[in-house]
Length: 187
Image (spheres, rainbow, N blue to C red):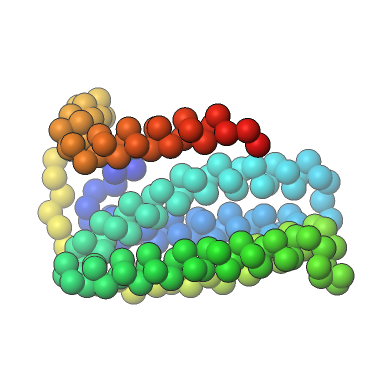
């Protein structure tokens, strides 16, 4: 809510670009803390801060990427992009997870901990940098900025619009029930 209220339409592409660059910087910072001999507390702090900030940055990148995709492509173009994203994305996630499990279970004798963990960040770095670069290549239509209401009014309007959508309310209920069921399953 905060970033969608703060960022005017003319800066949405820049928000996506700088969010992706920030994401890359976070990954590189953790990579460096794992490669450079530092105390464990510094490494743990770097990983914790990266995880926290990546949640925010990832949200910014995704929201503004979708905004830019909506302004820069046709409906057929968005459908094509989503088809490939939601087809290849899960395959990439599974492949990445399997590779991470292989690396982290001391299968690489030349990369003991924490270097094995750093290897995962090293492999992620060019992917995120490439994503940030691709964001700069977007050619989107300009959009007039709208007058911004106060933050309280913005939240109230957003909440009203959300609860008016039966699909979003149903999705919220389903997600809440899913999370509740997952939290009661014994580990």
